[in-house]
Length: 480
Image (cartoon, rainbow, N blue to C red):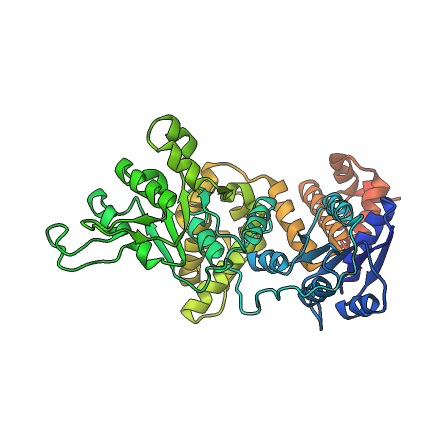
């Protein structure tokens, strides 16, 4: 079998991959840059699968992907990225990647993905020279949706795979999870991107006005209709119409919407001539439409028309590991909008927030960050700087799980200090335990060792190793 190629300028990432592949007896070859890998390709070497980082000094992983798909279109390419944003996923899929792997990654999942790619490549020629369509230019894209949680990565993958599709999409998610952001991303990364994106919240418009809002009206159609008016369907011609809170749409309008989706045309209110509708519909709801269909509150045939592709957005409770990423992003965004220096959360505040309930989901985090940018007195935001209702909520719900804080810190270090995570956290863990025990015993080491369940020699050695010599022993028991 040909080797799997690993391309990453980070030696620690290459090392992790090499060890994992060696353990599975999968041959491999590593490169520190995309230029090295492209030179090897052009000299006639071919891998079984190519795994490349997306952002490296000089030539990027996307440049390498473009070269591979032009000259070796059947070669599976897996793109790695530490930038857990939507645009990385879409860029990879638009460029023809087999899949993408967000950092930090689970080693077993990474190996499983490589095995899938190997299975895809076996028996297919890897050297056909075909002209491929150049992927869309993503150099000006901004990460409008962020998340490194597995549930968000699935959303990114879906948007990436739908980037060349006109399919109707139904988005399910609680209030504040970002349904309109996802709808805009689906439009922005679709063939309709240069046409209008029109959004309407069907629950926010009175029932007697909603029909005219959607389909428009002719002059004189009703009292006050002084002129012809184009509705949202006409405004979105050629583009995307986003129907938010579709579950609350009145029954008679459900029937009209079904006819548009079925026939491809509609009539303005008071109109006699059909109007063609070339519109991609994306619908969203926080409700369970399956249940509403069973209750007779939503048309089953319309549900099936809308439910071609369904995306479920996770609540913030399901993606707590994204809270550090989201708060950092929103604090920077708020600072930029207000023209001030960006504030930062202390480690204690971040731990506090990571264990809290946020019923408003990502929107609540965004609002909180804007409030903190305006109201927090210092550049470093402490727990005492949080709004009083959040502090009361935390106290009311009891102490936070320290493992959540540990998980958040591990996620951060995996990104900023790969290869050092275990040693750093292990030393911090031991240092904290010994300091607390010494504080309780007044610095008596033998008693502290007894409380911790370790030996006298062990605690003495660790005090020296961890730089805790300032914790002076007291009494005769620590002598000899």
